[in-house]
Image (cartoon, rainbow, N blue to C red; front, side, top):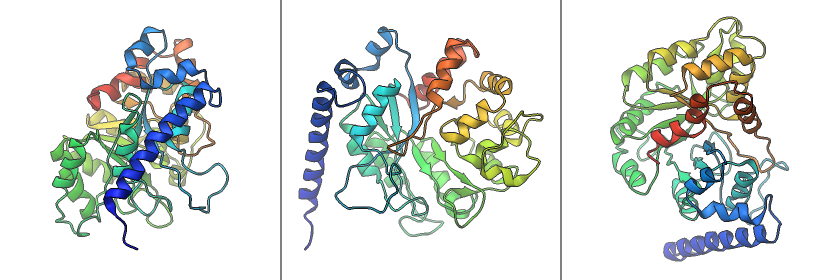
Length: 348
C-alpha cells in the first residue's frame, strides 16, 4: 500500500503533541523524576531558571528519537531515549537545554534519526531542545561534486544550529568529506564529528595517530568551526606512548602534552565537545592538568553528556558540580564551558 505523506506527517505531529501532554500529566502525577514544578520549567525561557539560583547548563550532545512499535533487537537499556524520557532526564540532572543530534550514517546503528525527525521533536520543546541537522557525504549522488548547499540552507532556515553527529567511516580528509566540509563552511554552520581509529568495524571518520588529517581539514577550512569528540580525539590530550591507546580511555597522569593541545593552540576553529566517557576521561584522568586545560581553552570547550542510552550515567554532571563547588576552575571558565560558549557559537 502506498503511504500518504501528508497523513503520515500529520500523525507523527499529533503523536509528538500527545507525548508532550503525556509528559506533563506524568510529571504532575509524580511518575517522572523531580516535582511537577520542575517539569513546568521545561516550557519556560531559561532566564527564570537562572533567577531561581540554578546554574544554566547547555548540553551540546544528546540523542533521542520517537518511540516505535517495532520490536528492535536491542540489549536492555541500550535504546535511544524517547523525547519524554530525555526531558525527564534533563529535569533530573538540572540541564537547561540540549542539542539534539540526528543519526544518519549507516555505520553507527540500525536506528536512524533524520534531521526532519529531530526538528519535529525540538519544535515541541523549543525552550529545551536545539536541533542540529546531519548529512552523509554519500548523499545525493555519492560524488565529490554533490551540491549540498540547498539542503544545508533549508535545514538552517528550519532552525538547525549545526551539523552532527558526523561519523561516516571513511578518512576524515576523503574527497567526499572535503566536498561537504567546504559547503558546511560556506553555509556557516559548526560541525560536530566523531573520530575512529580504523576504517571498518567502527563508526566515525578515520584519522591517523597524531591527527594529521584533522590538521589538514582545520587548515583548509579556517572558517569552519569543528567540535571534536570521541576516544580517538580526546586520547590525544596527552602524549601517546602506544597508539593503540587512542581507541580507548588512557589512564593516569599526563606527563607530556599531546597533539590535541598543540592543534587547539594553533587552530582557533577547533573546539572540544567534552561529552561521553572520552571527554570526561580527558579532563579528569589527571585533575590538575585538566584544570589547566580548561582554563587555557575556556573559550572553546563545550559541556556535553552524549546521553544516548535510556539507562545511562552522566559523569560530567557531578564532575562539573564539584568543579564549581570546590572552585577548582575559575567561575568565568565554568560558565563559558557549561553554557556561554555554546550559546555564543549557536546564536541562542
